[in-house]
Amino acid sequence: MAALAAVQDYRVLARKRLTRIASDYLEGGAEDLRTLARNRRAYDALLFKPRVLTEVATVDAGVRVLDQTLAMPAVVGPTGLNGLYYPRAEEALATAAHRAGLPFVLSTASTSLLEDVRRASDGELWLQLYVQRDRGIAQRMMARARGAGYTVLMLTVDTPVHGVRDHDIRNGFKMPLRITPRLMADVMTHPRWCMRMLRQGGSPQLVNLARSTGMTVNLAAQAAAMSRQMDMSLNWADIDWLRAHWPGRLLVKGILSVDDALQARAVGVDGIVLSNHGGRQLESAPSPLELLPAVTQAVGSALTVMMDGGIRRGSDIVKARALGAQAVLLGRAPLYGLAARGPRGVTEVLQILRSECETTLRLLGCPRAAELTPAVFQPGWEERL
Ligand code: FNR
Image (cartoon, rainbow, N blue to C red):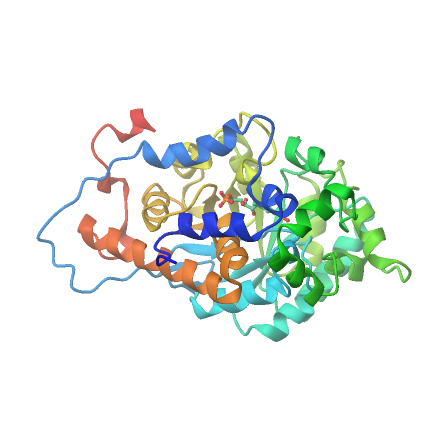
């Protein structure tokens, strides 16, 4: 096998290793995948303006975000149902993130308990929160995360309902996985995936959510039902309710307009994540990169602005940081590593991104990530974005 050089190589291998149902869930997006494609295209529109002979012997990709030191401007972002790719997936992601000097954000829809992830990693852990109609679930989840030393809460607000994902409908995707003839055929052609699932005792379960429901019988099935019961009455006034239960830093993830960024600042959150959920929610949404300059200009330095969507190269991270994002979230990229080669695949993907980041900084003639500005782009970049 040829050496794996780039995130894309892990993506190709991941597709081979995974069943169709798992691979479609990982890769897929909403409706006709326009937003998914737009996320990637946005990076292509930006051209660098390298400065030469600037002394680049030492390079420093590190930045400070929310009083934490990141080895590069990136965080391993929240993704649900990771047990579809590998046993104890969240433990592996958190451990690799820590090794890479990055925080890890655990999803509400994780397939490992937040306490188990804490035991596996001494690194910075953040919790992503979905709020169900029964607010007690979120309250218990926050209390557990506080007790386990999670430092940042990331409220995801772009998911009152799931986006329209044709592939999941076609595949009959449901948690826990149901054995259908279609899944059986899928499994037969992917014995390696089958072995991984058997090692974790079958279909991955939403154990983290289940632990907070306070229910005792058939926990996973009930948690799956819970996951479809998002609180659609959630609104800006509820930030006060969250604050009462979460003394740490609070971010809102899923902002896609200057107006909402200003609203977030007005209600006093610590930061926002510009995100279209990796193109999986609203079709024809803008890409976060396109919005970054206007948003950072509007909110000023009072708010930490992060973004995600389509990060597959170190140069993508550099572009986002230069346009004003404090850091990006990595969604699918670490999962490609995990699905392709297990825990060491995650470490390798994070190493590749860090190394590409450092190479880009050197070739740009701006060896410190903390000093990136839009001056690293060719004149007229605003019109091209
Ligand atoms: C996600 N995302 C997500 N976001 C969130 O807040 N909670 C979640 O449980 C999930 N689950 C999830 C599962 C999968 C398989 C994917 C691909 C994504 C969205 C995620 O945090 C992030 O916004 C995007 O993945 C970023 O885009 P890229 O990097 O995947 O292109």
